[in-house]
Image: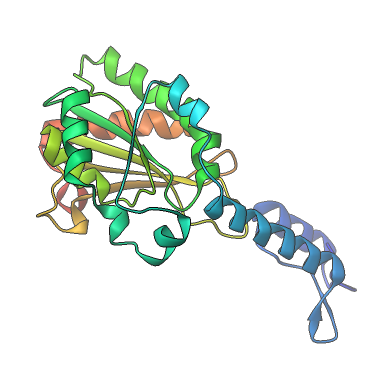
Length: 239
């Protein structure tokens, strides 16, 4: 705590323990203090690295995901053309159809999104929990797919190509100044490009200091059970 002469120091310390927000930091005139400013700049650098770095493909290979890429050519285009991050070439769609299990009950996708760090930090733990849970329940699980330069809507095109019942995409969230490792899970029943965004059920803030990936994996398996039973997802899903 860098606040000068706090009225209630103990209360400030309790507040700081409950949130990563920059509170009780004080000022030097109209400016942040040096310590606070340096921490802010360091956190901003982490967020930039999360966006501009790449997923460790050794992790993807170890988990036996097949690898595909959207129409995006590089990171610059990914940031400036979000529409291209939602689409695949016809050649890529044919490759997916040729390499992946047709008509799975559950199709799992991982995508770098806006934080490659999130995939590197969380994918091993969350994927193993999801896969074990689905296998124990007897679901027919599709061939796992990793999408480079992915936006959430890539799940719709993969779902349509493979005729999946439930499709999940685990994707890096836009980083903030508290963490660069936050992942989200978007799930949909019979995901389709003809359906609105509200078709998706979302679990967000998955990382070690938020919702731990192991716990998130168990929640995802439970939600898949509900979706399969109710044959629905998103705002129409009654839990």
